[in-house]
Length: 237
Image 1 (tube, one colour):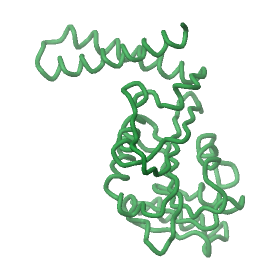
Image 2 (cartoon, one colour):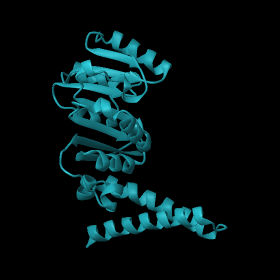
Image 3 (cartoon, one colour):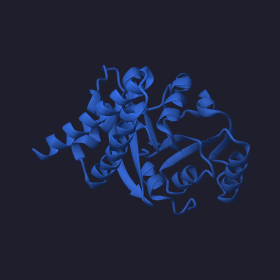
């Protein structure tokens, strides 16, 4: 992968960046995504944020090699601390992390999202944590995608701020309001995989020595299994 040839998941992230956006790519690694956005005239400027020294140095080297030092600022900072008010950021991309970590980055840096019109988020797991954050913080999920790359399944969530109250039920939080409407083959594959794992874990917990934590965890798993069965019954009815 490089700035000219992104991975499938990063290409999908790039497709959701609006033309002329000023982008902050958090956890930018080699800065391939912001370099791609600038080379293709999608973003007007960008910030590449990295918390780890090694990837930060790689991002600086990549931006220099691409001749984009006047358009992309690389910063060593945790999460949204890479954004400064003078940047005028309008879009934030965060890709390749767990959903719980992405949600915590957004929560901790919420004050730096002022003026941001779109969040494009690609969690590797636990997308539900991002949806929960959106409900609690006034962000509407305007688009979702699910894709498969090298036998791994990824979700992409696109959020925009809203003054209206955001409400999602248990099914929408777990499966995604937009993905529930689509229910494509990759969606079905993902949740069939998940359900098999949940059932196996629930069975082991049933046979384990019982305490409150084990009972609670098993009940949570059974609740998820029930929701999934409802979804597929609805889809087949």
